[in-house]
Image 1: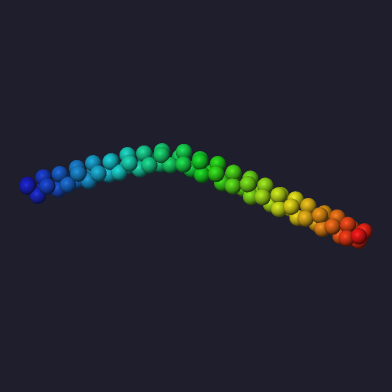
Image 2: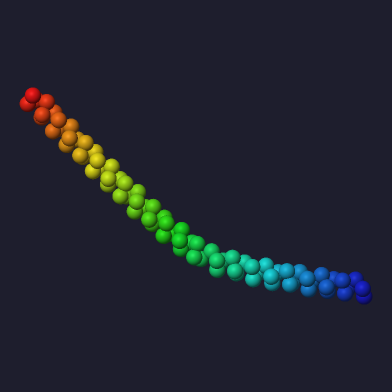
Amino acid sequence: MELLKQLEAKIQTLVAQRNQLREELAQAQAAAVPLQEELQTLRRRMEDLQSEKANLQKERETVREEVARILAQVEALG
């Protein structure tokens, strides 16, 4: 009979641990939602900045080519 009581106590302990772990998991998942949203916002911002960087690089190259063309014209005059 003593073995049965020990087994019952062990089962109750395991059930309590399981319930606690489920609660902790739910809390962790709830805490993760704002972080996931922030991560998505940061990813979108990074994509925007990468696009802006590419546009600025194209613009810089265009300006560089234009300056080189103007310098070549000035040298041709002199």
